[in-house]
Image (cartoon, rainbow, N blue to C red; front, side):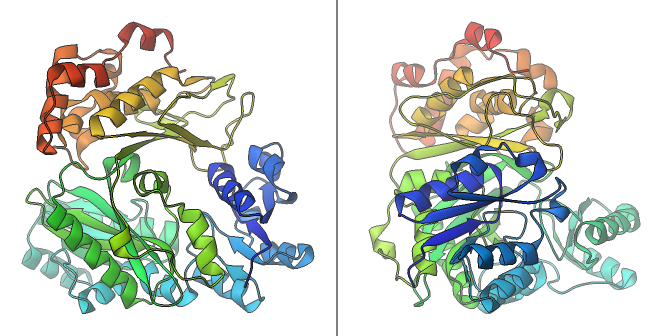
Amino acid sequence: MKIHKILIANRGEIALRVMRTAREMGIATVAIYSEADRQAPHVKYADEAVCIGPPPSNQSYLLGDKIIDICQQLGVDAIHPGYGFLSENAAFARKVREAGIIFIGPSPESMEMMGGKISAKQAARRMNVPLVPGVNEAITDRVAAKQVAAEVGYPILIKASAGGGGKGMRVVNDEAEFDEQMDRAVSEAIASFGDGSVFIEKYITSPKHIEIQILGDQHGNIVHLFERECSIQRRHQKLVEEAPSAVLTPEIRAAMGQCAVAVAKACGYYGAGTVEFIVDENLDFYFLEMNTRLQVEHPVTELITGVDLVKEMIRVAEGHELPFGQEDLEIKGHAIESRVCAEDPRNNFLPDVGTLHTYVRPQGNGVRVDDGIEEGQPIPIYYDAMFAKLITYGADRSEAIGKMIRAIDEYQITGVQTTLPFCRFVMQHEAFLSGKFDTRFVGLHFKPELLDVQPDAIEIQLAAVLAATLQGRKATLTQVSASVATTGSRWKRNRLG
């Protein structure tokens, strides 16, 4: 079925991202917006726009029935949910389908199977995909849970069965901590997801978070589009992502890709999705979960593969087969994404809402900015703190890092504190440059006062040479110096805030 009009059930940068591809495909777009977003760029860009309610998301962007009514009134063929809000809500996807509207995403049945961490792990186990040692069914009995923890061996991780984003997740180092952390995990899971079920697994002490992008059609064809490294996080939420990973070998990359495709096949998946893995210091990998939607960090995959994931999602929803097979896909170059959040890294990454008095985007070769805000606009307090994504692309990792540093220096933002100074700190840290980092990066390496310290140029260059060597390339100090040279004084003049 040819799609002629799409409603984007989202806001901000992802709404604009979907609209741009739709316009390139000759498809009309409908925006929905809350009263807080009345002047937002996605509202102005769309062909039609409808105010859906007051600012709180439960009175606007989460009103599934009202969104469907708008679609029927405006003759909308399809809904793209973006990420967040209703994107992984199987009940909403089912209602969309029952209303005769195309949901640009997977089937409700796939979403239900992969939406619960326990059912997802059971599906992965059936496909012989490696799982972290632990128990893969819900635990409610505290005595039984303690016994499982003792059998698995401390430290263990108590994890909410439903949801994500680090909610309902607690590390337990020994039995003395178990009761308190179990209570916190269950309480937070109930508050966040309305479901207090948890499971227990071994806690990997030096974990890397690496995910595989998959894409499937409604004819049974599924491919993977390689990996993204997502280990730079604070409070279990990502801040810097890159593709490909600096440490995976071709053999491990292929094995992880095959496992991701197997997980997708286990639930009859179509559309774009992501299979997440935890990787230990020996590069052994274990299935974590599957996100049944487009990811925030999808641009880095697009840049290294040349595939427009939103376009392919739309084509799949129309019933087309994928235009390529696994053998047609290859990695070209390197891409890095820095999330631009209205948070203050000097104050424990606390939200810092306000108005963008100055907002000038960086430009130039290899620089992409996905955002949903303009100069003079306030950052609404009702939604996620991320308002933009800065993505750079280079022929190799060193070049992508150099472009990121340059782009951050050019990004002019005043009125709110942002995470960009932290992202610049990451780009210059030897652990990141060498690839020898994991999800503990913030705790191990970051202190707010370090944001005002410029690393020694020679140290940066030597670390970058090491990074190049680890990737099997030869690089001279002169070449790397040109790629990652920094401009400390200019950064001080353009500090965000």
